[in-house]
Image (cartoon, rainbow, N blue to C red; front, side):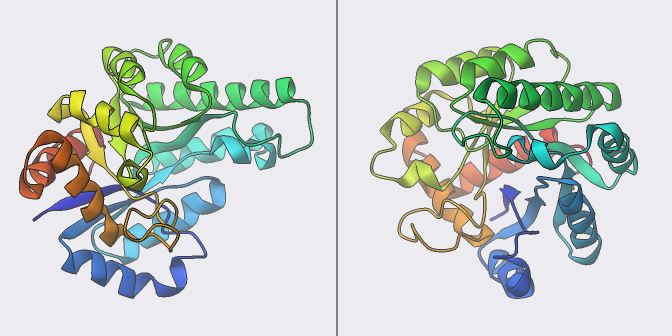
Length: 263
């Protein structure tokens, strides 16, 4: 079996101390490729080093919407662009809009949203200019996120940790997006997510863990690791009435087609 965890935060302090054993466990479970996601410029540097030091680990570069207040727009965009142009990264992300968490800088909600939108748009412009795919974080911001993506029809996008129902899934698919599913699709309350999986074309789905967050059942509440992406694939298989091997083949093909330089 060949599964690709397309979204894990290996640079997290909750994972790095045990990273060699975490990667060994993933390999034993058939997860030989992991995309390690950046949330800020420090992550970009760390993830690049991880990709250089560990076989099967690939890095992304981007500014997460919950960290935009720490991002220096005066110098940050050129630094981010230099990271991407180095060729050491397979996508821009994770980027997007998050209206769930309150403003981290104490600003008004409107100012917070406008800052997120400005940083999101600029990163989409960079991805567009450099022909890189983007990994999208959207939480309580689905309409605004899709509206922004409509301005960038040539940018290949995946909505990570897709947690919406089938109507939203159809809208995202019509826009050309890929959908990536994580451990919350196994939760008892996640029937709308499972309905989205059921209607999603098999050539537009990817699997992820979002490690160390959102561990799937039966590990819910514990530290998530890339090995647990197997549980996500099993749930997708149940929705598709397919075995896990078919899910692994489809989602890994999709990941290799989506990301730049993933091999």
